[in-house]
Length: 455
Ligand SMILES: C[S@@+](CC[C@H](N)C(=O)[O-])C[C@H]1O[C@@H](n2cnc3c(N)ncnc32)[C@H](O)[C@@H]1O
Image 1: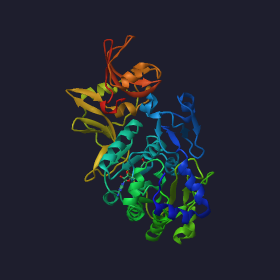
Image 2: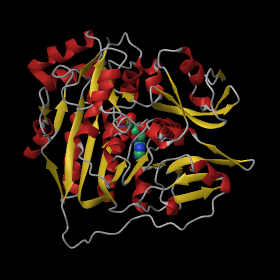
Image 3: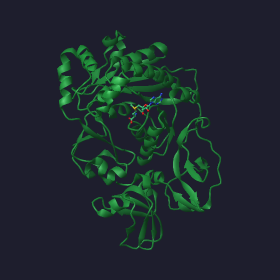
Image 4: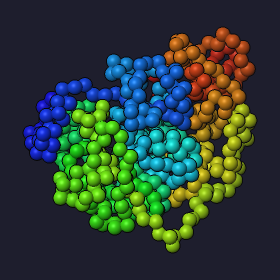
C-alpha cells in the first residue's frame, strides 16, 4: 500500500526501532469484528447459535473476530440486531467507559453508532442516551442503528458541540467523545482516508478536537467521566488534545485505564507533555489484532457543594387514540403512561429523564411506537425491534435456515401453512424479533420496513 511520504517519515521518526513492525502490518489483512448486542442476547447464547466461525477478542467481553470470507451482514440474525459489525480496536472506548444504570450519557460524535449501541446496551434501558452527530446524513444512519439494536431510551440530536453545550450545561454523568480525526488507523481499511489525510490533515483535526473536547467538558457533571478516543496516531490529535483540556479545565484529571495485553501507554515525550499523559492508552496494529486507537479516560472533580438534581421526566397523561390502547392489550410490557407523547399522529415513549427539547434539532426523541393511520394504529419497525418475544402475545417464529425468513426480510407476502387468528404478529427468527406482519386468513401481510429490506 502506498502511504503518503510525509506520514511515513513522521511515523518513522516517532516509532524509531518499532517502525518496521508497524509498517509490516500494511502487508497483512485487516481484522473483522462483531460485537454482541447484550440488550438482545447473552454472549453465552450467541456463541451457541452463531452461524459462522468466531474467536473471542481478548480485551472486549462481548467482542469476536470473524473470518473476512464470511458475511455476517447477510444473515437474519444481523437483521434481528443480535450483533454490530465493528473493527476490534474501535470496540474499546465504549467497553472502557463504565456506565451505571440510570446514568445520563452523551455520545457527542456518534454516527453511525458503533459506540452508542454499546453504551445503550450498558444502560440496559435505564437513564438516557443522547446520541449526537453534526452530519445530517450520518445521523440518519445512526437512527437506523439505534432502531435496529432495539434501543428504547435514546434521543438522537443533530447539532454541533457549541450549540449542544448551551442546552446541557453540566448535565451528563458520562460522555464519550469519539472525535473526528485524520484517520491514520483507517488507512488499511479504506484507501479514500489516505486522500482525506493529504487534503485535510492533522492540523485541521487537532484544532477541531480542542474545541469539541472543551465543549464536552462543560456538559459533564462534576464527578462525571469523559472518554476521549480517536482512530489516529498523531500526537497532535491525541496527547496534545488531552493536555489542552487539562490546561483549560484544571478540574479534570486523567484516570488509569486497566491495561490489557498489547495495550501501550500514551507518549507524553512526543509533545514534551506532562508525565500523567502516560495514563492514556495507545492501541497499535503491530501489538494487537486491530487497526489501532487512542483512548483517554478523564474525571471531572466532584464539587461537594453541588446537590444532585431530580431530572426524572414528568409528563402529563395525554389522551391517545383508542386503537393504540387496543394494540397495547397484546403487549406484555409495563409502560409508564405519563411518558407517552403524541406528535402529529405519531406516538413516542419518552426516556425517564427530562431534557430540553426546544431549539435543538432532534432526529428522534425517544422510543417511536407507531402512528395512527385512517383510525388504525400501525406499530413501527422500531417498536418491534425494541421488544423481545415474551413482550407480545402473538408470535410467528421463523426458522433461520428456511426460505420464509428471507422472503419476509425481502418484504414478500408469505402463505401460512398453520391456522392463526387474524391480527398483528411479531415476526421472529429463532425467537428474536425482526418486525411486524398482519395475518389475514392464510396470508401473512408483510409489514417489514421497506427501507430496511434484504437486497
Ligand atoms: C470518528 S466518527 C464517529 C464514529 C462513531 N463514534 C462510531 O463509533 O460509529 C466522528 C464523527 O464526528 C462527527 N463530527 C464532526 N464534527 C463534529 C462536531 N463539531 N460536533 C459533533 N459531531 C461532529 C462526524 O460527522 C463523524 O460522524
